[in-house]
Image (cartoon, rainbow, N blue to C red):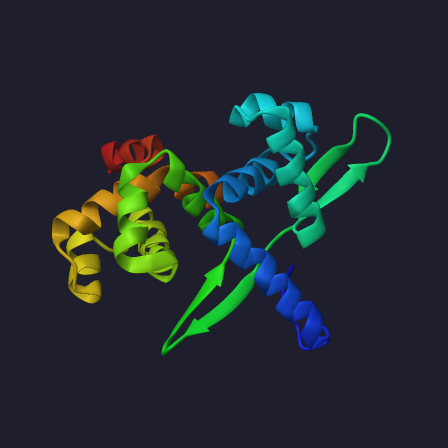
Length: 192
């Protein structure tokens, strides 16, 4: 769901409001993230994976279909569903952040991760989006929790806690190379 200037303003507003619902309701975000990871799934799959009652699962899936962020991939019974890619850039004051499946997944983890929940309560979803950017950079070895803390004017402990909480999300959505020397590097060093 990338935004381009070719889309009608009404479509962009509708899509933004749909994504806003995902960011406000962690259970919807969890469902979206599950379908984004797993691709074509039935409502029964959703019920089992997310431990939802049948009525709740159908209500949530239908809300996401109506919102345009999930689509039906097979119309015969049992229907299958998949998440549409979300890529929406939002400007909040002087800060700009991009709403991606990884951010939606992180928001969905609010229900099960007290550290993410606390961070959102203190810094909002925009703050979580920023922390997610730092988490990716940290996993790539580009920044430390202390640099994040200094840049965002938060305690080093708060930075470390949220970075650790976001680590599984980063590894789910971003290809991160493990840091350190490879065996090839060691063999070459031995030969010289």
